[in-house]
Image (cartoon, rainbow, N blue to C red; front, side, top):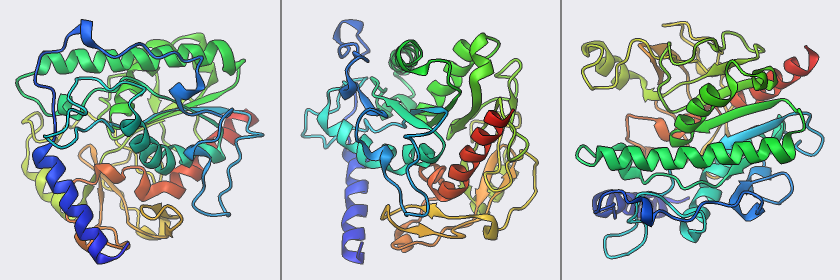
Length: 354
């Protein structure tokens, strides 16, 4: 991507953020999109019985191993229903339809290729399309009831998809639950409601709940992972630029609305522990995958757990001169792509051995 292209992309992002379409009316159950039919493979963004972007790999050194994998991965993608330009009628509802072509294309070329593909070395990848809540649901201060209902609707779809998977494709196989951002929120509730403390927990390899805060007391018995090969546990982190994060979270008090939450689990994806203030240098980073997909950036950044968030130094990649944001949420998984990939493989192998 040359500088001209980067500038055009940046301009588009700025325009979308300032001119985005958002829901104007209250959530209405009579006007929600149709319920997805999960017997139809078109309603799966990734599935082992179809060719999809989760099958891709950034390098021949990290091949797609789904065909002979003994475990499965259920991946819930982040928000891609973000609103079009104001003049468009597109994406102005509280929830996306699973037949929304533009949203599906954005999902597939983004989250499925760049995130779900992380797990194709560990297991068969299943990623259900769901009636995701509009991005506006996470930022509104006046439509909170509508936002809650939109998120609840999306969550019900992820549950329905998981139930269908269990009934038709699981056959007692071990599985990983993974999700990012909105997808992580749904994964978190699904693990607590349907897996923790139930017979299914014996099949849980691990959960990667990334880009969403998980309180230390959210689960009753499921514990944060504390080692490379620990199973039946969960990992979670949210990434910020290091210097900004140190200033932001040092001067804040817990619960003041700024993001600092003392009782939130944070995993270091370079050490796979939740220990605070243990610095992991970038030499431990096996590689990030940002753009283009076929480019791996070794040692792209470091990591340190600090006050419930993950601190990382500004990554360097092609076009990064234009990457000025301080919240690295968009790169939670991609900055540590190869580490997460190899870790999912290690936990899966450990689970099978045991």
